[in-house]
Length: 131
Figure 1: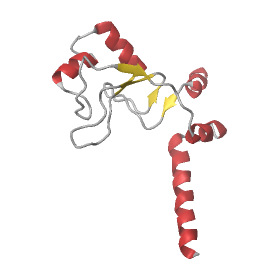
Figure 2: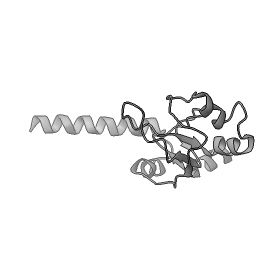
Figure 3: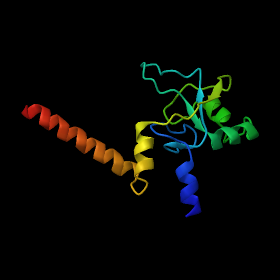
């Protein structure tokens, strides 16, 4: 139970995943590259790391399993062009409407909350079409 309480207080960055370990959404600290804005097709993917991967990367430098080594080999989840020379900055946590809904309904999963929002939106659209 203690782990659940601690996890509930952890910052969750909905809609953003770590481009090194693949965790989604990022929980805890989030770092974003200032230099990776969009890919060759203009798709704004950017480049994000969770706090654990950033800390690991800082410790191991250019070790084979680090973000720096992945950057040198061009092996990220979405083929971003992140390089060792790029600047990573810590992104401050921002509470969203989804965070407030989760706090008000702790017994529900995020997936359940999103499904309810989707159903409510569909019902609203149907009502508007009937008018």
